[in-house]
Image 1 (tube, one colour):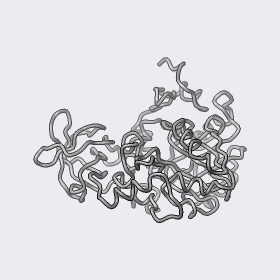
Image 2: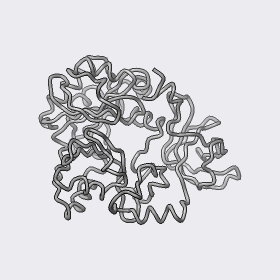
Image 3: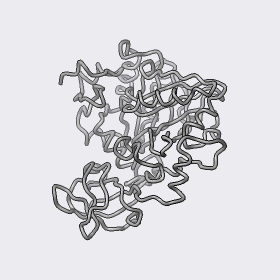
Image 4: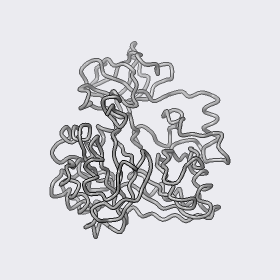
Length: 378
């Protein structure tokens, strides 16, 4: 493909030599290398690595940073301890979701903020716009800090081979300073696949001077990691029941509808943007809710497919769907009226003009968490 007009990440040189590169939100990104199924299985059973340099990364610093972030997001930033991470959402005054993001507390006056690639410019502008009344500084360092995700049940084992510190000491959803491939960097124990893993933040490297990022990437491969593209990233996050911005949530969706009520602290100290609208929705009741659907008949549900009740009346739409490589059948996330949310409820999804049977199941995750994922029985 002709990708001269696309943005390049720090790892573009590797992708163009070894992967199948596509246009992903204006970035030249690999959709797969060896194949989606192979890469998906590598992460579920061993260790895979992903280029996540296209995501947004911002430093938020200053005396008012905690008060500022608590005003911007729905979750309670004051509960964070040093090096702790917090998953949350930013909302408009209407309650619609601007984006989901993770905040890491480095100190009382310094936070690391990570958000979605598709919203990089929008999110930073929103942060800047709403920071005027606070003594806080914001610096977008997305292009100055490379980002690599190391994921899978053997992620620790693989990363440990090129890391000086003991990775066992890095707790889930915490961030830590590490020395990897001889370079000092931060690493958070999290990811977007449902599995154990780490997100590496490699400073002082740019898409124009990517040597440090490429060295870490190639060292990880030599240590046993399988390079993975966007295809496996999407199938893995779907099996884990994780939201994709633009599909499962957007500015028309309230956190309560997206089953993100656990990230909303309506009683925290101080007002946050969207609080009144979310409270109103809670008081009045929601008209739709996100559910997981397992296909009972052969068929692969896709984004935008209609969801039908047993009388074949349209009641909702699939937001994310596909064939689960791990489970071997079709799965989907969809918005339906609350009366259809109960597990075991039978539904149809219209696939190629025909109703195909499915039923509502637990979707976070779709798989058995004692067998797969970071909670699996060791």
